[in-house]
Length: 141
Image (cartoon, rainbow, N blue to C red):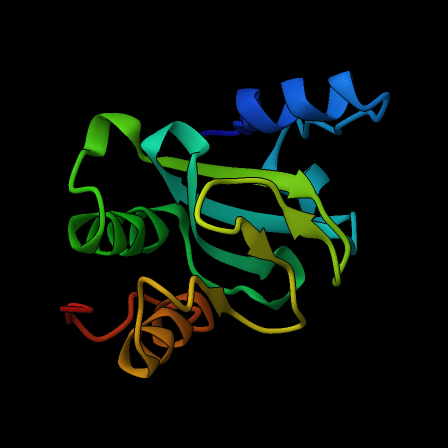
């Protein structure tokens, strides 16, 4: 992830467009951080399975630990890095996130898909997302 424009979900953008809604794309992390309703969404299956959501304003980690966390979560569900997505989207707390197996939800904390992950995975995600430096090495397995 670079400041050349943050990725957004093509699947969710298409779905929003079909419903007459617009999505917001951010050009940089700095721009996204100015939006109190920006959220990070980690998904597998090209956006089909929502693994995690968290309001961006709560996070402190850099892109590298975020990518590592995404890879750890994906290894537990689809285990297909080619279909793993980390996106930043305008999703206020309370927003649903379209996806298979029930989609996802943005809450004022870390949300992990309850059918795919256990409490220990939430603890690991918080450790990574809420750490300003690199978090203690670990795995969500």
